[in-house]
Length: 348
Image 1 (tube, rainbow, N blue to C red):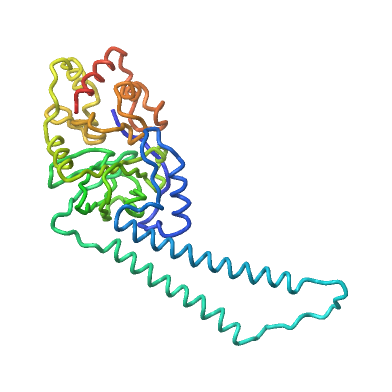
Image 2: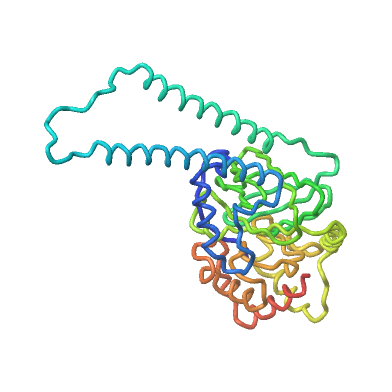
């Protein structure tokens, strides 16, 4: 079974947190609401150095655009009022400024200066955001985008998880972004701008959360039917708590004698072809690793809260939670589903 699913929109590597489009997208993201509860992300509350850089650049761009709008609007209003037609006016045209070297020079030089300033500050921001060098203690995570879920691999910790990225406070986290199928885009608005996840290419990004807690993100590139539900969570822990989480994830899958029937059943059906559970014959790579499934808050890439009832619904009919999800309905008897869910619920 595939604990995945998802949909939004796709392209080339980009940092679209810089313009009005990103602002609009951020607002849409903030008002969309996921099936699973969580804090509302806001691009107006950056909580990581790269997000601060993007936020400052966005405010500068908005300020310049607002100033141009006010100046043009004021001149237009003045012209309409000052030169409106009055009773008794003859048909003579007002004084013309066509051919004025001073005016033409002004409306050539001023926009050029504005564009030049924007080019400089945008370049400075791009360098600050994209060219950062990982310090020696940086956490390295390999991110793999799938239709429609996220796989997170911690090479130095020997940990593999899905859809929920756990990071420590006080240390920068550097991500290498890859795709297993189509173009996706990794975006957690409060931590950094969007970075595309492209097949046969490795992109990179980094962040350093300033506050412990959960940050919501979303695939920001249309990648197929369930793109809208290809959500992700970044959980920032105090250092000791993060180390405890890593230690827990390194443990082998729980063995509960009361769930033996469910484990045997799970290993006898096609679930093992897609999913891995450490210490068992389940060694699939197409779906999320389930070794510590119940340590996650959500299933199906954030589409549902991780409860036994939701697991039962997901296994029975994935399309009811994520229409178009690639996990097939297993068509198991109700009693078998109950046994498997009882086993999965022990994987903490």
